[in-house]
Amino acid sequence: MDSVALLILSILFFVMSALSVYSVLRTPLVTYYLDAPDRRKMHTLQIPRIGGFAVLIAYGLSLGLVAIFSPEMLEKVLLNDTGLSIAFAALLVFVIGFFDDTTFVNVNVPVKFAFQFGIAIGVVYLFGISFQELYVFDHFVSLGEFGKILTIFWIVGVTNALNIIDGIDGLAGSVTISSLLIAAVVLFLSGNTDILFVVLPLIAVIGGFLVFNYPPAKLFAGDTGSLFFGSLVAILSVKVASLGSNGVDSLAAFYIAAFPVLEVWVSMIRRFSYARRGNKNFKDSIKQVVSPDNLHMHHRLIFKGYSHEQALHFLIFFAVSISSVAIILVLTDDIVLKSGAVLYSIVFLGMVLRRLDYGKKNYHNSSNSEAVRRVIAITGDSDYFEHSLRHFTRNRYWIARFERVSDIMGRRVDAFVVYNETVDHITMDIQRAMDIRSTSDRPIFFITDADIVTMPELQNKQVFFIRKPVDMPYLVHDIEKIVSNGGSTRFSEINGTLMVEANHAE
Image (spheres, rainbow, N blue to C red):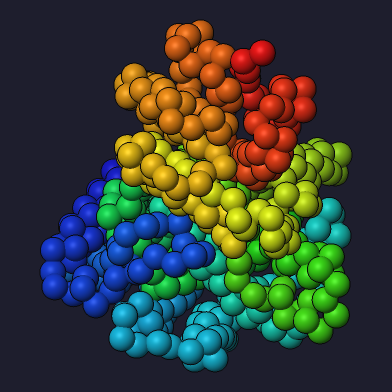
């Protein structure tokens, strides 16, 4: 019976969320909540950031319906320490987020932090959810009053971490769902079965929002949504940590929120490292640690040529793979298995960081007066590719987009990039390359998934074929290298990570 009730409950919250978002999108309210593109953001159009508002409205209305038609179910969904703390967080987030996400009100950082600390203090002292006794690798550590202070800063930190990673379509919502699912499994396996009535409706309400936020997004969560999502992950992770008395390793709490927390830690270390590498003093290096930039994991994936959807899938896989260690920690008491799980997470994190080129100098560019004078002309149907190239070459190259060769006749161009979005457009893009070659002898970089042998007309035309997905830093590096050598660079001299295949006239 409980499983049927839980299913009906989840369907209710999902439908109410989807209807709420759908309805809000069709009101004049969206004109006051538009998120404009800028140099740090991945979107190129104005998109409403009112999704969090719609999610909270749906959550409140759904709770109201449950209270009316099934008061006894409300006790499981809301009237417990976890449910009430989440409702409390939702209320405060709604108050601050409703104004902060508008285009005409700018809530300053101190006020935001005041509300976030208010949420954390309320969760700890009003509802009694805090780190009290940690159980790590068969050792108990009693925290006393310090545990409450630690909990407050943990909740604020995790809440902001979710806000920081919310950089591409669907990411914050998807990561929150994965964290909540892992938390629900851990709590369920430890004997807290009623927690499903709190967590699954929350997953459902976020799922209704993701219908409209999945790439390409029709709306964003905004600060309202990301702060609410962060509060959920923070509260549930603290709840998992409280299972230490039941023999559940408290490290599981960290792994519930692992992806956003690790992303922020890595970003802070990276910024400090770049500042020191740039000969900044210690004080200025610390300032740079908290300065926003465009080199987060999602930025790097876009720079590598991933679409928003591909980048989203990559990061969800990473988040789930890391968070799943929490389940292993609750399933076994064996120290060796626990140690192996933790070691796996460290190795896996290292592999991901290496894949995203953390620590490589390609991502830390200094100005180059010679490079600034160069012009790269691009053509193709991918706005994502153009945005990524402009983003990465900012202040170093002029990027000129054209549709017809006549658009750039008479202009000096150092290199051409033809981006073949789909194989269906291959004939049109081959013709573009041929038109370019008929009027210019500059190198052409042809980016495609198509088999090169199917394009004999481009052979021996000084065309460099590049397989997708494109590693953007290396693409820029190799364009500069080839252009500097007058377009005569051979394959052996080109960075091999791009899998470039070049044909040259002898």
